[in-house]
Amino acid sequence: MMEIKELFKSYKDYVNKEVEIHGWIKKSRESKTIGFLEINDGSFFNNVQVIVNGDLLNFKEIFSLGIYAAVNVKGILVEPENAKQDFEIQATEIEILNDSDKDYPLQNKRHTFEFLRTLPSLRARTNAFNAVFRVRSELAFAIHKFFNERGFVYIHTPLITASDAEGAGEMFRVTTLDLNNPPRDEEGKVDNSKDFFGALSNLTVSGQLEVEGFAMAYSKVYTFGPTFRAENSNTPRHAAEFWMIEPEIAFAELKDVMAVAEDMVKYIVKHVMEKLPEEMNLFDQFVEKGIKERLTKLVNSEFKKVTYTEAVEILQKSGKKFDYPVEWGSDLQTEHERYLTEEVFHGPVFVTDYPKDIKSFYMKLNDDKKTVAAMDMLVPGVGELIGGSERENDLETLLQLMEEKGINAEDYKWYSDLRRFGGVKHGGFGLGFERMVMYMTGMKNIRDVLPYPRTVHSMR
Ligand code: 4AD
Ligand code: MG
Image 1 (tube, rainbow, N blue to C red):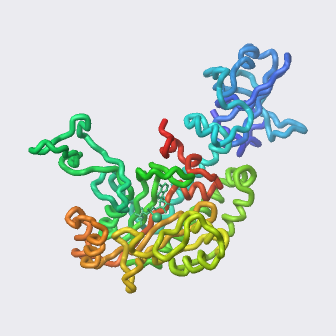
Image 2: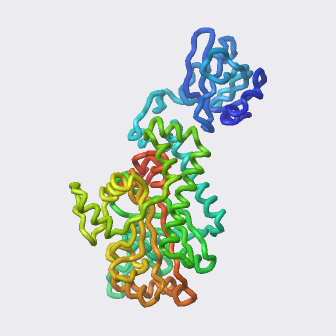
Image 3: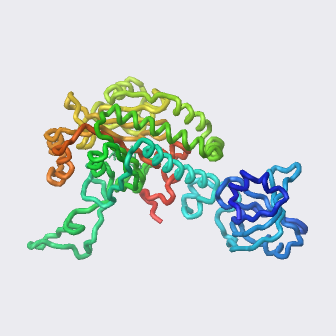
């Protein structure tokens, strides 16, 4: 049995020899005396053409099968003259493994991504999604390879947690309580705050706080796992369940964190372009023209840097009419981020030193006491790809920042105590994995880079 990808690589060794493949029928046409099948097993884009002579015992049965019926084919590999294919298989025996019903929804025509979204369990069978999810897999591998080669330790942070790392309160509760019959206190008031063995529990929004503890043990660590946000953002860039890569580095400042982020993005882009050239060609041809050139440029460029304060000035002076006004102190909106990266910097840009009031409690307070040592990496087409910061390592300042944000310091003692026991300056970032896949493929909607997207209005 040969995988189709392998066969395309080494067919020259099999000319006029017997080969065996299995796969699904992508196309089929026949006359009385001869028929043609195109077979694929999903390991490669190109289909294998199989020639079936009319005298094959089950010829009729084979050509009454539906699209995506599964077959096992034995035959002789031949090099056709004047044909489009490199090779064909002259079938000697075809075993039918399973038919496919005639109402199979993916007939041979181009379907829109919107339509294919309604078929999450089938859409990976199309060339575009086959390529997207292969890139997703290869990107994940490249990320592990990048960190592994640099001595980072991979930490599995918990998915069920009591902490709210981003302080936005957009968490999914996890509970074992019977909410139809909630627990009550002595006065009969509902108290359903003690979900799990007496503690409030949620699905994690970020593994950062937990992984910071491990950074103080190993110096260089990262976590890579699913995260959950119950934000009601129905946009092409937000999902309720998405994956995040979060490195955390001890003895590091913001500039060191940005250097790792830049190196990582370049490394993984280069890895995928080298490893999956056919997939990249497909995106270039059908999804976003020029994407290969854009990514090649990125790998060879130096990412720009601008402070939040400078960015606000640039936006204000741009004369462009934005839906949301720009003023110092308010968060940059996607339209602002895209303008900066697409029309001002024409490539990735780090925006640094945001006002403390719009950022999380753990970020290091700058000397001006108004801004924090934070950074966002913005990229064309996607906007915010990465968010990170140096962490506040001074216990007093950290406790004060928590108080300002209304966070109960007692709940985070395990975290702030890291400062008391040999805490050193440190920082890290979070890369939104789906946004990286979007950037790498040119896909414009996060729903099209998640195998089974969990977004507002899409639970199946
Ligand atoms: O900027 P965020 O919220 O940062 C953190 O969670 C930090 N704890 C990271 C750290 O410093 N360790 O999220 C990081 C990235 C964003 O830049 C974005 O790419 C992605 O995660 N992201 C989302 N992706 C898809 N859907 C959502 N709802 C997302 N929210 C954030
Ligand atoms: Mg962010």
